[in-house]
Length: 132
Image 1 (cartoon, rainbow, N blue to C red):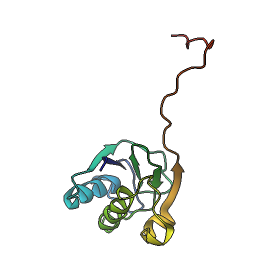
Image 2 (image 1 turned 90 degrees about the vertical axis):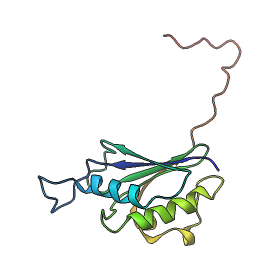
Image 3 (image 1 turned 45 degrees about the horizontal axis):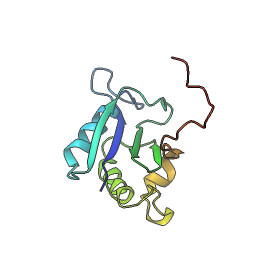
Image 4 (image 1 turned 135 degrees about the vertical axis):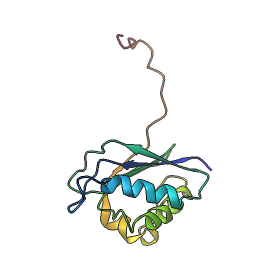
């Protein structure tokens, strides 16, 4: 099984966050790390995913699979749902979990679906190399 990478925006702030305490995204990161038992899942903090209007935001990616960005996650309640959804994602060959099998938070919180990055291709004969 290939590694799945979960990016968690730690700068996400929700209405009502204590200005002197950790932001909602950082609290979600802590909750995810505390609950994660999947050996194939790596959870990474990122400073910003630029989805400030839909905090808390996470992005999931894996080699040769679609990448998804999800928002509107609750920092206290979403960790179990996110980990459940990521287990389903990791079990697919392409990252596309059938709609009926997705957690409700993934159905309503999806912001973007990005195709897998293509494998590098050789340049066609006669094509100039890119300038450095």
